[in-house]
Length: 163
Image (tube, one colour):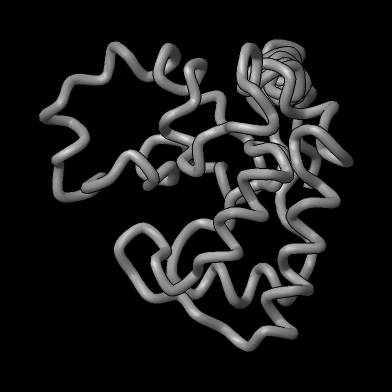
């Protein structure tokens, strides 16, 4: 079967693909946070919620959070001490002020790495970026929480928060 060559269709396809690639590149400049690659972290943390990129918080926040899993944002997320130590090591090694620093600049601008909040949603730049989201939208049945990034950022699990 001989399909005729259509320059307009090909041009549109190339343009669409270029826009997708350019969008991903731009996302890397402030809306991309390298996703978790550690299978233990993905399994333990991901069994309850989106596995947040370690570069979204400084190491001190991850250490404090992992040190009190019995009171994990209103839930008891206690796990085996050896597993907790392994997860803490991964999160702190890839945190905003350590290994994940190249991804975190925009989000953590002006935040003290020694006294940062435990909630990503309490970071000043997160608040600034989401200030126009009306209160009713956070309460929508498909959102229900500011921590439910996937409700609006459909590629958050891949590290992209540009939607």
